[in-house]
Image (cartoon, rainbow, N blue to C red; front, side, top):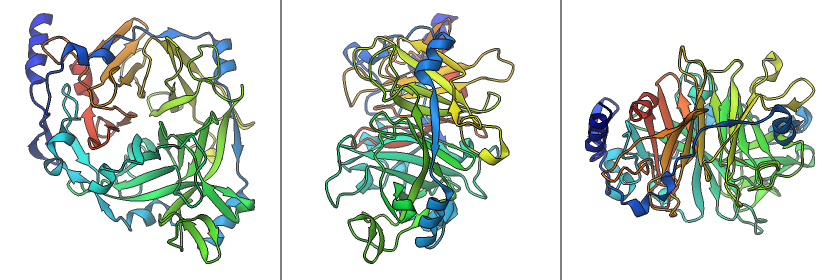
Length: 450
């Protein structure tokens, strides 16, 4: 039975077929067979090894630093008040292309097995941008149990500019921006860019945020993202989105008002979560880890923020862990206890290096959560990555080619986000000219492992 199932998966991997908005569309891939030489990213990461509580606490602990409400209110007042998510979605100016309008090259970035059921390509100017790179995704399925923000279905996609680890040149645009996508109509997704900024001078000014945006989670009314330079995590309030009044190249206050390098909207950080052990170090197993990818797990009580460390260095293992969200009514969407401290409540290490996306999910009736990690090809960009499901006993990934390679997930795989109301796993690809936002049913991922 196992052998026959394997042959069935090989046959299914010959073409990408999916349903989008109730209409059957063929999601064809340019290369559905991948040679053994291309599958270097498919080595098994093995099982999860639980980290000792004392070690995890020392390495993974965070402390919260929130910007004063007075500073945030000052900035909001100076810029004409908050417009929130609704104000941005009422003013979208870009359209995502449906699958049929994506190029064959773009469609070739989609996974071979399991196949996508929704796929969209960015505005052509954004799809070809050499400076900006899509890295992370979260949705209103994370934000609210209804799967909507108000009356809308929303997707947030985080992009970062190349060179974000270096100081910006004068007059250049910021380093981190988020596409606010109105996904209410699955046949007509539209979006508007929002630049991430940090208040300064008591809220009288702001500066561009530097963030790799490798991970991003929208929970309740807060957005938590990975920060640059080992600074931990940054926090934003989705109610505090502001509109600029100056269309210049500067970022911050000018003589005529506020400018954001040509972007109409900005979202100021309201605080950060900084590592207790100081700045992070990549590739050292016992050091404070740098954050890589993030996701939300609603199957824990309380809901939790799931994290993986960033790739780098010569480490042979990667750590994955989770933090609980606060249950206090006055601390919606925040981590930490009332004293501003955050401890990891579960932590593991895995042999899977170079992890680009992480997800934890426990199915109804299951005794433990399943962990999913996405990994790019070890041979560099342009090749399919792999998606592994792990627990303490081992790891599994789909077999999608005649040579039994596991390299059949998306090309240049990004962060992962689960939409509970639809059962879909959302992610994106980050390879230039092959940038696709797509969804795969989590049940299809699990079925591909049988």
